[in-house]
Amino acid sequence: MKIKEAIEIINGMTSTVSAKESNDVLQISSKNTAIYGDWFLEMPMNATNWEPIRKEWGSLSPNIRPEDLALVMDVVQRLIDTPTKERFPEKKYRLRWIDSNDGRDDEFIGPETYLGRSEDNGALYWTTFQKFGAEIFTESELEQIKKDNPCLAPAIDAMKEPAEDKND
Image 1 (cartoon, rainbow, N blue to C red):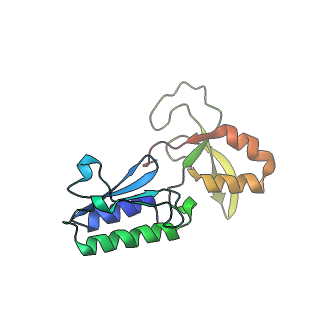
Image 2 (tube, rainbow, N blue to C red):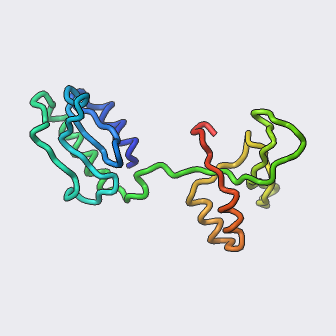
Image 3 (tube, helix red, strand yellow):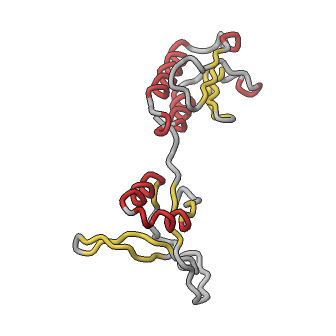
């Protein structure tokens, strides 16, 4: 389970509890005390058991419904059971190639050129793309490419550019 997913479940399926991410911890509060920063559970994002999870039961509002509290505990346990690296969305990148010098500066065409993979009759090959339509790689995909082709590792590290927009 991803951190964002846990927050969405808690905030979407409970009426008396809220969750938010703050300074690398997941804070869970009573809905009516969240505005004051009061929380009753604070889970470090990398917690692998209940030991580092801070509990402030005095901040637990008597208005919290038992089923909401049960759901929170279940979600926290599911996060603990999820390997730490799987809790966060993977960063995404494009591989920026040599910029063109033809003077185009269009949102979809632009001067930027990116590397990507294409397929022709089952044969995979590398080619260039403009930003619109350029292939986006996850960190793990790039690491696998570098592992499979160690001589490309320095080039991949030099070309790696964050895919800044989630709609990319």
